[in-house]
Length: 180
Image 1: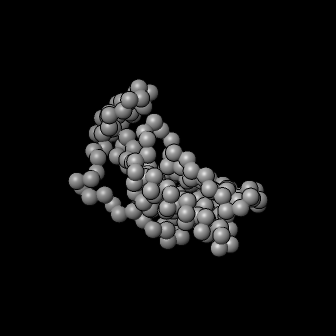
Image 2: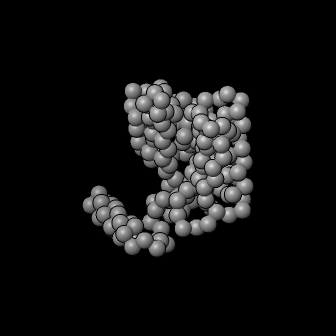
Image 3: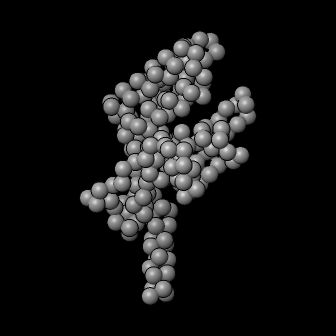
C-alpha cells in the first residue's frame, strides 16, 4: 500500500509497509497514515528531509506492525536480523547496515554509518557492535517461550528457501558430528 502527500510542489513523502502479497491491515494503514502526517509536519516545520525520513522509518520500526525494528520476524535459525539503508542524494552519501541484531531502530544505525564512519555498509556482528557503541536502543531478549528452536523452521511456501534450510541443517549436523 502506498500513499503520496505533498507539502509543496517540491516536497513529496512516500511511505510503504513492505513488499509481499498480503494486504495491509487496518492497523498498518493507520500507522502508515500517522507516519505520513508526522513526516509532513516535520518538513513543514523546516526539518531536513533526512531527519524526516529517519523519524518516519523509526516510527514504522517502533510500531511492531511491520517486518522492521521491533516487529522484525525471526529468520530460519530463530534469530532476528535486520537491514536498513539511508541516502542523502544532495551530498552523495549513503549508509547501511545488514544482519543487525537486537536493535530497535536499524535506520538510526544506517545513519550513523553514513555520518560517523568512512564506510557505506557494515554487516553482522560489526553492525551490532557499532549500534551498541553509539548507544542505540536495544530490543529485549526474547523470553524462552518466544524463542524458536535452533532447527530451521520449515513452514514456507518457497521451495528454494526450504531447500536451503534443509541443506544448512544437514551441514550443521555433519559439523557437530565431526567435532564430537
